Length: 186
Ligand code: GAR
Image 1: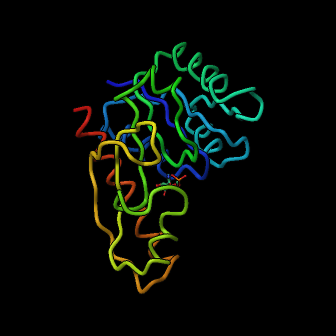
Image 2: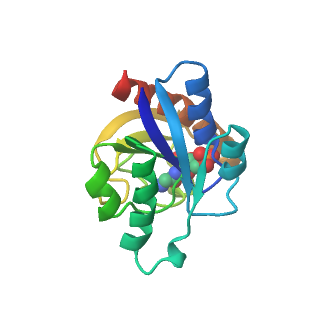
């Protein structure tokens, strides 16, 4: 059974999907901590509802990225976290966390990488006019969405419609993240 921390900056629907997969016995893991850089993020409510500890920590309260990540690392080590699962954490992981967790940090991204890395991947794909986009789960390295790919799934763009395409991608994300983590851990 893996001890994990989920990192999120927003709504936390992927956090929720992972937590529910664990509850259903589909993933052999325990979420020891949710880390967020956004003290107003909805993921905090979701974590509290599930009785999971939250570390809400803002980079701007620290003198450097290194100091920010060192503060996170201290809590991760105290809780004996083994894997970092990024789920809508909108920040590059720096050398402090990479040195401690390299090859044990994964991310989900809403496109078929290497197409459309970075912010608003769904908007980028629609603006480009692609007819198929998708979801990628990958290891995290120092680059922006550049690490080794673990699993991908294609999703059709629905009539160039942002809302419907976004809904389709989110639904697929929740399945693909679970499947990718099963593949890594089971
Ligand atoms: C997800 O679509 C995730 O793939 C994306 O943020 C969303 C978070 O949703 N991540 C990135 O764009 C990372 N570059 P959630 O908060 O509901 O899980």
